Image (cartoon, rainbow, N blue to C red; front, side):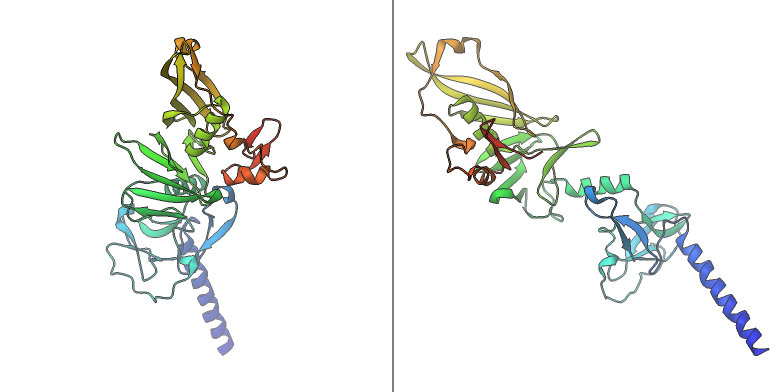
Length: 324
């Protein structure tokens, strides 16, 4: 008789636990106590790598997402604003990091629960996190420092990029004293890549201001003054500079030169000068070898290119290149 009663009690306990777990999991989107949700790494290339979040949901009543808030000592509790503040032990675990594991505290079925983000939401979250923001006093990108209206980020080849607000709603990017201006939103990934968004696709900005100046100087074999670089929404630089020349080989003048530079490949196209430029002779200068790295000791060409932020030396093209 006693065994029968104990069996019934044990059956009821197990049934109650299973029912509670089924309610906690809801539609597969909520998390309570140590129930886990599949999420993704904060890297767009690793969206298929599954990770787990271990926050707690109180299932407090709500009507809107705004009725739910994050509480607890480790900000790992999703609760209703109508509830008393959650009191938890202050023992932090990495799996309680909602931002890292892309969990959001939302109102689902009129209950406050942790919710799993889908891949599209995760991508948007990553992009928003990677956005280069000026005047952001609370968040700063990885390997960057933020000071007032200025952001400084480390790049490969020990180069430093400084970003600050311009006077016309644009931003200025400076590297090694060379500036470029843009109205396009820039993004920086944790591995140091700079990119823009074009539609739903990303376009990496491999060629940065210091490299643009060096590339066009070498291509046209002359020094330029009063240079201006603007990056457009297609990832192309609109370059303007002036070079010294002599009109009819007698009168010193400055000739304006305009060109387009592909920020991903470094290719220069659409070089333009005034119609009368054929009447002027460029100022004589020694041959420029600057960015080519073609005159260094054989075998050190790649190393030379890498110190300038490129990847390899291309002997056929006679210039430094980026890897595909």
